Picture 1 (cartoon, rainbow, N blue to C red):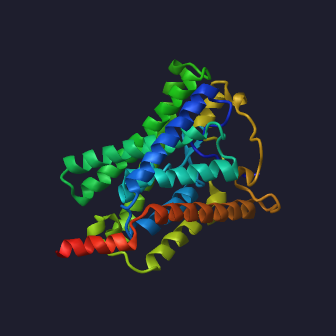
Picture 2 (cartoon, rainbow, N blue to C red):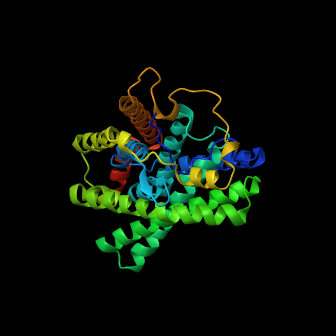
Picture 3 (tube, one colour):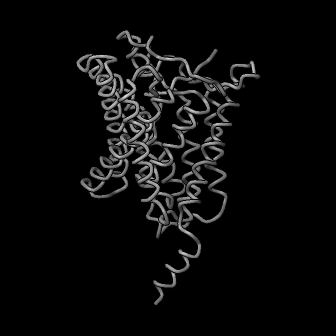
Length: 326
């Protein structure tokens, strides 16, 4: 059966219990802080955009592309989401995606979910965004500088997330740092190139079709539901081609197989839509597509709901406008 492998999702068994608990404590603190940082700041452009980006990232993560040595990789998306929404809102989007992947599709362990969110949803997001901002400013803030910054940020975000994963594995006693660190950095340096290309392509497409979505909110004019429908349609179209994804192991899985700790991975304690399949659908392509559609709907709904709950209230926005007229 076709099984999509997703990059850097740590299964239970790879991390020691103390390390995994530390990951959960970090997530609780950082996601709580992200909720406070975004409360009352999300506007009418950002609220639906959070749902759309969550749907797109989830769908894009089902499309693995081949890299060297029989290994595959895919988009993480943290840098892309942070460029469009800001890093704290991006943390909420990435947390929703990774949590749904673990809870609904058994992709990554429940105990390890803390560091899965930290690595892929927080580290990659903030590193990618910081690198993007630095390159963008250094090169003069032009459209070309934005593209260059996005490429550097996307590539570096993947690399530092891989570094963090390697350290966590070493501290857990899963593999010595001198072995797992160069292995993780080597394969993810190549995967990061794919991340950069997809990120740049997505930004270039948005700049050509809806440049207002990457401008400052005060200058954005994203009224109407048409762009929301188009965004969700794109995510669903990506899901439709998910059965064509490269079936080779992802970066972490390849490192685990090559260095003898793959057998430490524990089976999930329950199954709902395991390995991105719907149990009662036997056709390989159809079951993957159906699972992807369910995932897109769930992550979009969760992210949109969180955005609505923390976003700027209409009366607050009205009072802001009134204060500016005084």
